[in-house]
Amino acid sequence: TINIKQRNPKDWILFKNSNLSNWNIIFKGIFNKNLDFENNKFSRFNSYGLNGCLTLYKSKLRNTNFDLENGICEDILNIKNSTGNINNIKINNALFDAIDLDFSNISMNYINISNAGNDCVDFSSGKYFIKEVILSGCKDKGISVGERSNFIANNLEIQNSKIGISSKDESISEIENAKFKHTKYCYEVAKKKQEFGGAKIKFNSIYCTSDFIKDENSTVKILNK
Picture 1 (cartoon, one colour):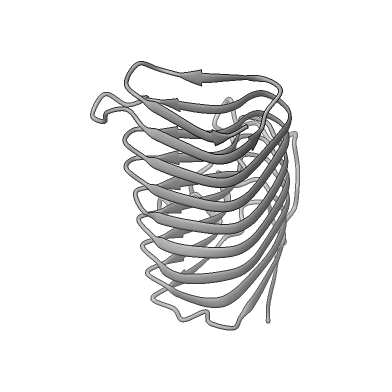
Picture 2: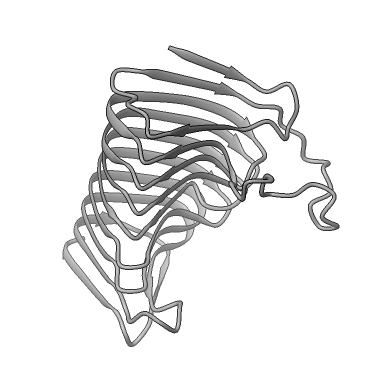
């Protein structure tokens, strides 16, 4: 077990070329909503250009667990160019994104996130699989899948968020069972960036009582409502 506790909201940690198999990572941050981001008195990036409170780069994961809370970084957890399996991720109180995964191939057994000022989970340019995910209080998107990512989830439950899941920019998302409660939009499937095309999303089973967003470049397939 590695316990990380901030003394200052600017504190950050990087794991590089590491093997975190069978490790439990616990992070307790200092949450301060009154920091002046608008006037750049507090930067979202550190002096090395990293924007995660906890960043993993070129790392191997197997049966790894994360318990994180109270982060005011751009991402509480940022995983880049990494591979493997994460057993459990629990995050509470992210001022911006809770999780950001880029250029990685990661499978996850369980994710539980509450209260994020932007996206709860952001996937880009990789392959990602989740068995079960429960998200609540994502101010923008519960799950964002972009930049030619492939995303598969068995069970997805998202509530009290603006958009449940967004699949965009040539990404392909496949959801076995999805449940959306108190979201403005259950899902979004669209082209967002000029250099990419549309996206695809497929639901085997979906519970949705609100609206959705789809553009002419993208496709949606729903087998059972």
